[in-house]
Length: 240
Ligand SMILES: Cc1cc2nc3c(=O)[nH]c(=O)nc-3n(C[C@H](O)[C@H](O)[C@H](O)COP(=O)(O)OP(=O)(O)OC[C@H]3O[C@@H](n4cnc5c(N)ncnc54)[C@H](O)[C@@H]3O)c2cc1C
Picture 1 (cartoon, helix red, strand yellow):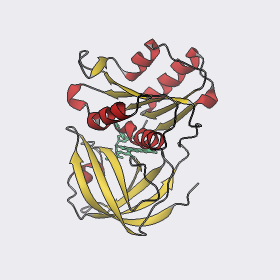
Picture 2: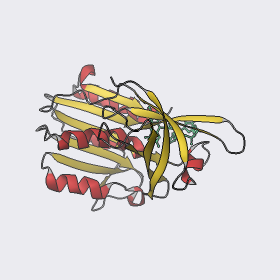
Picture 3: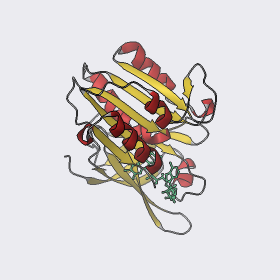
């Protein structure tokens, strides 16, 4: 496992993806490079400008290149949260402290094993890094991604998912729309409902899940009932 270090980071790109999800790209000011495994996370730390409270929150690394002098984070802004409303207002050049990498939710499967990946909203971040890593290395295993969002307006990353589909026949994806009708880009239902209804290949397949507690708990039950063994399932829980 790469050793965690403490970094100064500087915001170099900020892109709004939906009404409440943003991509943040930070360059590493000092030290200048980070080495991490796809799926790991970092802690972003800053003092609240008014209360001076030290805020420290975990974010999965969405980029996959390592070692690298920049990292991509995909962040959902919570209106009642402490750090994310501040991040929403950060302008280019904003500096913060970062610590990492941390975590054991890493791509452990051999390249020829098939992967089923499921996430809700920004739970896609570590899976994006894992998929990019597999595709860059021309791993032959199939990759099926299920991404849960509420409605068509909450769909993000479609451009990159489409480009992967075009270039890599072993990659497919499904948006699971929990609160809207079936449409051209997605299927109606929560990730849990859609995976429950799928006829999944179990042998030679590993599963990676990322999101809130409810989705993870439900999916663990569903997958075990379908016959997946505990050592085939890996997960990262973002919140209770
Ligand atoms: C290992 C790990 C990796 C993470 N990676 C990411 C990531 O890549 N992108 C990302 O957006 N978040 C990620 N999170 C969540 C993140 O750490 C913060 O909890 C989140 O950004 C809220 O911070 P805040 O200071 O704005 O809200 P807080 O002031 O901390 O309060 C927010 C409250 O909402 C809950 N909460 C946190 N996230 C959500 C959510 N998405 N939906 C509903 N309720 C929530 C928290 O449990 C808390 O009770 C990760 C969490 C963990 C543990």
